Image 1 (cartoon, rainbow, N blue to C red):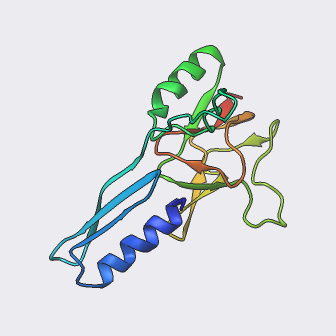
Image 2 (image 1 turned 45 degrees about the vertical axis):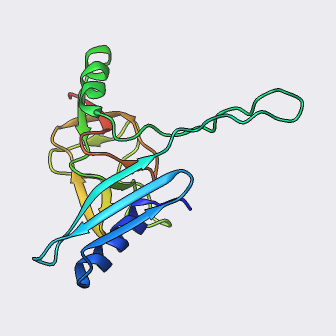
Length: 166
């Protein structure tokens, strides 16, 4: 079973709302362990993906490894590298969550490549724990690149948008 952020947050909420002191789940590729504390809070202790070992087909060839996203990466160095190669300022995600480029599916995106933005203007939303957090531009300028897609999971510090100065 594949666990996404929403499922893990739901489990944490359930552990917090009960007197459980420990929740553990393990299957072929996922291991989750959540410890509750006496104050009624929960803490995710360990979640890891097990290594994929290719299994041979009957004809002796092996299966290709499935594409996986790397676990939490430090995106701040990526922003620094990208900023040095490309001119402009990078707006990064202030939290882990799901990025949305528009207020609703049927609405226009907050910004598009080529748009002029002002400091404090909303450039997107990061949903975390069912709360919609507006991400505001820290810079004035022109949107040169949108570095994430609508509905994409983002990490803390992950580059979202590159803006060049006016």
